[in-house]
Length: 243
Ligand SMILES: Nc1ncnc2c1ncn2[C@@H]1O[C@H](COP(=O)(O)OP(=O)(O)O)[C@@H](O)[C@H]1O
Ligand SMILES: [Mg+2]
Image: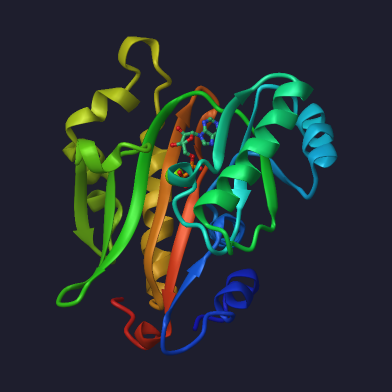
C-alpha cells in the first residue's frame, strides 16, 4: 500500500483479506476526493427533519440518496430521488426511500440519506475493471443509469499516459454530447484527461482496487464533477501493481 495518501490508506485498510470488500457511496467518494476527483456538494442526514433542514441549507432542488454499505446500485432499489423542490417533497422522498430500501434489502445497514445539490449536465463515466489475464483496465464512456444499454465505451490497460487519455476522449461515438452539442455544457478536455490520469495513478498506487466506477461524471457549465462512486477492494491484488 502506498504511503502517500493517508485518507485513502485509512479507508482502504478496512478491507478484509480473503474476500472482495465493497466500499459504500460515502467512503468511495472520500477516497476519490482525496485523489483529486472533484465532487458535488453533499451532506449526510440522519433523520427526516435533518434531511429537510440540510435541503434548505444546500438550496432546492436537491437529490436524496440512500447511504448503505449493503447497497451498490441505489436506483434499482428506489434509493435515489431527484428533483426535490419543497420541504414537503423532501419529507415524502425521505420516507419513500426508507420504505423502498426496507422492502428490497430488509437487512441493509442504512447510515443515512445523502442530501445533494441537483446538478444539470451530461453524464459520462470512468471505470476500472480487472481482467484476470491482462490486469486492470480503465474505461471511459457515456454514463448514467443506461450505461449498459449504450455500450459507448473505450478501454485501455493501466497505466495510461496523457496521449492515451486524449485518444480515449476521441474514441466514443457520443463525444459530441460533451463537446457542446445543441447548447449542452462543453467539457474542457483537460479536466477529463486529469480525471483519467488520476484514476490510472490511483490504481498504480493502490492495485488492491479491483473495480471502481465514477458514474455519472457530470459535465456541467461549471466544469466536470463526479456525483456517484463505487469501489471494490481485493487485498489479494495488493502486490500486483501494473506500473
Ligand atoms: N446530484 C445529482 N444531480 C442530478 N442528478 C443526479 C444527482 N445524483 C444522481 N442523479 C441522477 O440519478 C442517477 C442515479 O444516481 P446515482 O447516484 O448514480 O445512483 P446509482 O448509480 O447507484 O443508481 C444518476 O445517473 C443521475 O442521472
Ligand atoms: Mg451511478
